[in-house]
Length: 202
Image (tube, rainbow, N blue to C red; front, side, top):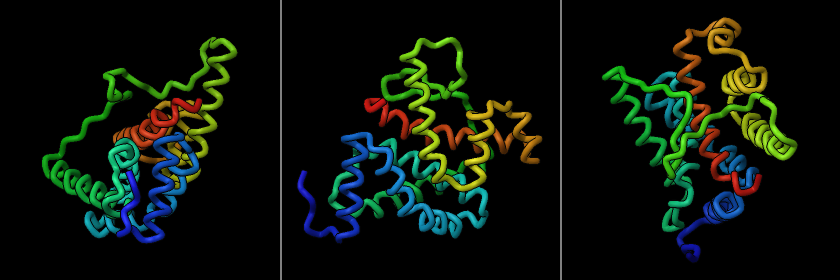
């Protein structure tokens, strides 16, 4: 799959990051792609929904969906074009659903093979090898979590690193329980889409 001559230098750099992320499960490549586009995606979504909290949530969702489908990206057009399309389509779906007022929240996910995957990072008598893998996963999660907006960072820190319950988080951050669950759902899906792509390297 050759690079299209129609791509700008910026788009070519993006494509090299995509290749590193897909082929090598490179955590830094995911983080750099997110850094390059997080703000512009956020401001585009903010114009669409006119609500900063929703725009933040939808930004996380857009990157989660894009990273999940990263292997489908082809350099016929710029990565930014592809990413913005995913983000805007997801936002339109969100606006439609909001009108119908439906949202599903689950505590784990099915991957493409139909396996259930959950983010259980609690330590329960693992052998040394499992413990080492767990430590590596936490390190990878922390790497990506540092790139998130402070509100998401705080939620994930409390839930996965300090092991607070949903109720404790709601009390600590003075947020409605439903908001905490919905935002953690989005954050978890985002992290899952990155973690599953790097599982070969841990």
